[in-house]
Length: 263
Length: 304
Image (tube, rainbow over all chains, first blue to last red; front, side, top):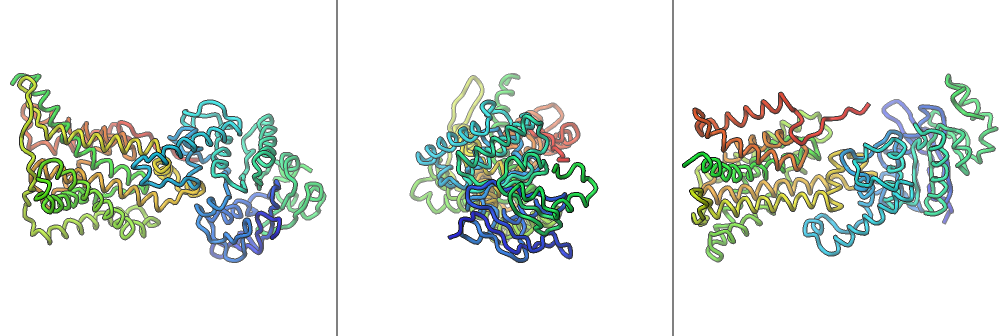
């Protein structure tokens, strides 16, 4: 068996006549932190949506942990061990911080609706376990208080962490982070870098992130893949990517070049 | 009777009426929560619940009698049967329409309502059916106030069902999933929540609660007919809107408020009980004008 956790090959995604991904291939080794970068509109989030089962690619294969997951429904993909956060905050409004994280454990619970209606001892014990693990996840990401507050009343940076805690509560093998640093200040970014490292080192969860902050990408990732116009144009170690002419061209070719790759 | 007696008596009447409204309104609001559909067929599930309860009671009353124990068994049976019917309706009629424009599924709900009403009309010939419950009229006096045992059992049962629902929704993983689905379905899938199953269970519970109300109403008022769900459907909708549609505590509160308003409203000099419905719907209009989100509803947030 290969030592790759996630392997995408020949992914092709189109909406009508508009091709979003064209023969996209890349992989995430077990236990690695990999970044996916590329100019705006390159198809990065679409690629995430393909992996998590929201979009159904026309062609290609997505192997996760030695198993084909292309075409699986999103909740099955989550059950298989892939968790994800979004670019914009997507916490459940009107639910508390703790409840948000607890909802992440849905696919890891055994007690079904009927056990819940009857409140069997097994269901009660499981409920206690769920709470315990969710608290642990929150503490792991550095949220130590305000568990009973409505999630959307937390400060922005904290909401981001709660999202990560909720994703961790699904007990994933691979965590997909979609622009986790968006809207964070310099101090929070530094904490995020540490958190991503700890997620891999302490919990053994591989991480794949989309990020525009190239400083953060260079610091945190072991491998970087570059997507441009739906095509993978480069893949390698951060150093190699920095000096890759194709990558420089892709970034300089667009108008916000200064804001782009901080080489 | 002096004034305080009238108040106390109407309080009891209002609680009984309000319990029925609340039970039906709960289903309304839960279904609205998960698929944003005003299920206009919901009152008819109450009606079908009345009939299933009637059939079940007729079948078992020879063994267990027609008093409350028998009614409870019949009610349980009606809840399971109508709960399943609700799931079937969702799968057959609503599920294929989920991606369609909102108006289409609303019209589908009206069609389901007509189908249920006419099916029962066809089977019963449109006759009132005497509900063969034998509840008696025992009770006790508090001063000049008379409370029937039936009224207490009825309000107590409704309260028990509502407390159970509230516990289920706030204290269990499945209940949390249900609330999560009403907030953000896509995100739920990423949490590994099987959304169609959650929707099905919501329909089961909502329909079962309506059936419980239908059986109890049949036993309490002594008769059922195919059109009995129409008005209570509208009233439950009113109750759900008063409480804040989509909110479970709101539906309970809205049901009780509406029941009490009707009970007291008919006591205002010059407004007889024939004005009861006018009174309710006037309240609906007032709520829609003054506080469209209802008593416990939260304003809809637009995501930018």
